[in-house]
Image 1: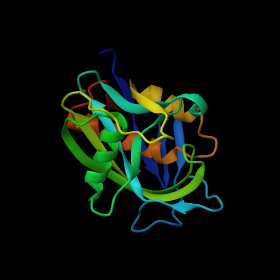
Image 2 (image 1 turned 90 degrees about the horizontal axis):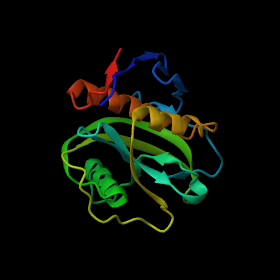
Image 3 (image 1 turned 90 degrees about the vertical axis):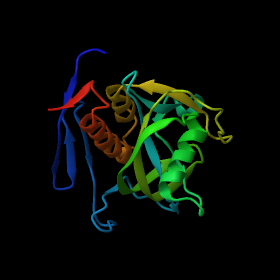
Image 4 (image 1 turned 30 degrees about the horizontal axis):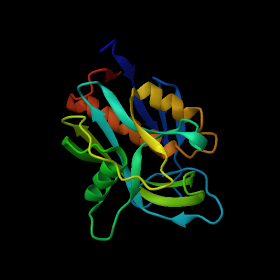
Length: 205
């Protein structure tokens, strides 16, 4: 599976530095509740839409699952994500979104990674959003898929990528800080996957 990729995570104030891919982002705390960090750039006419995302990992291939946008999405990688219905708890809702958007459904380990407030531009729906987002790490038992249930605007498909490939994809498109919260979540999820022994390609320096 190739050589191990070392990375370190250190928090200084509200700024997290990741040395492996030289990624940096800043979290501001003015909207924070109980220490929840806030990411992104505030915009006018933001719609509130709470939900979350899943960082999905396959120990067999040592790859992470993302959606790759086609057309106007210009190859953007996304974490599978969405809103949660009133009759769902947050874990059920996020796993449902992962299943509907990727087809992945066979998980052997799921755990909550963290919560943030985030401001971002939803390119699929062409709206400005603000949300409280929750992230789960989901480790697959198998990469078998069921048919997806994508909405008309969701023009992406499942691909498997390394941590470095995902970070590079976001870094090239992050001039407006729309993906800072995903960078934060993926950093934490990879670190946890390493701690649990699922991710054996990356390592904490």
